Amino acid sequence: MDSQFSHDTFIHPGKVSGVSGDSVIVTLDQNVHCDSCRIKSACGMSESRSKEIEVSNSAEPFSMNEDVNVVIRKDLGLKAVFWAYVFPFILLISVLLVSSIFLSEWQAGLLALGVLVPYYIMLHYLDSFFRKKFEISILKLT
Image (cartoon, rainbow, N blue to C red; front, side, top):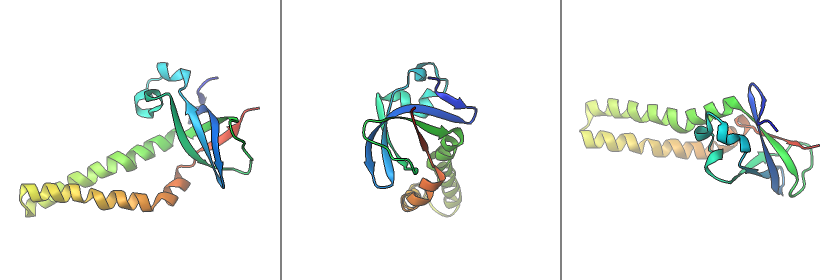
């Protein structure tokens, strides 16, 4: 099976490893197509044999050990990289540059690092918002 579903989505085969309420836990096995993929280091799928992801359940019922396909939009990866790496870097550098005008070097450095703590705490509390924005879908194999 080709791992590319269309031009804007990727599909990974997986197996249902848990069902709890409105979510399904899917274990993604390493895809054989990962070896030839140009962006395998960014995806993270090539680094281990299996990964578990939690997917919001659709109206379809799923059972344990059922083979499924996980459909992931390409733009979700770029959004995730932005919120996890790019924006914190911009925040860190901005605070460092502005605070170095008013504070000594070591104080500006500590303040720049310290501003990341509330940022990541805020990300933690906005978990439900990001779960809606980063929606991943699963399809039953027929």
